[in-house]
Length: 98
Picture 1 (cartoon, rainbow, N blue to C red):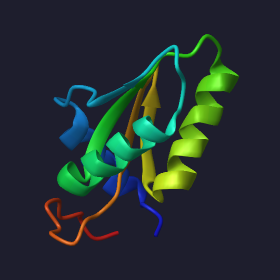
Picture 2: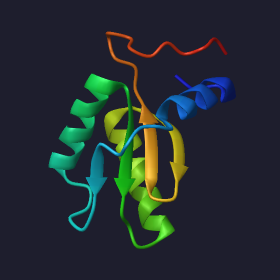
Picture 3: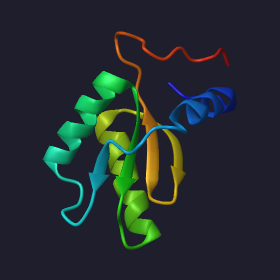
Picture 4: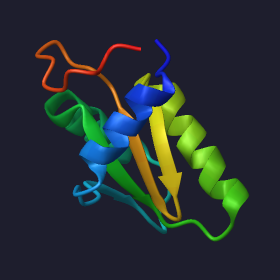
């Protein structure tokens, strides 16, 4: 599933008021962090993650690994905040039509 620009804009507006739920710091991207992200996606569908990495490349690699492991869709990466979306069975967020 890919998000259209209209759907991404909608999710960005929904995520604007959200605070980061998961913070990735000095210990990096571990199994515990992955489990917490997966749990948060199941519950919220749309979450922000704070990635505190020294350089842009490391941050990008961590974000790519999160997307690959959780099968979530990237919405936005601004500074150290990374927003992702994965629809759950409950469909808490209704996306606009493409």
